[in-house]
Length: 71
Image (cartoon, rainbow, N blue to C red; front, side, top):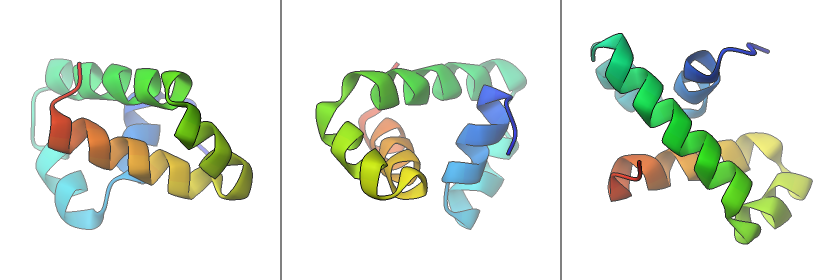
């Protein structure tokens, strides 16, 4: 598993979004990855999901960041 936040964020995305985000400038990828990490840290609902499935919690946080423009 990658320790790079951008790499982890890209892994959490579905293939179509992964391709689209990978094409963006590195600065934008880093901004989105930081928003994704904040979403994972701050959302208590994701804490519960993380206990059941860490990958599902990461994917849900990634979806929220992309849909909500968090960050």
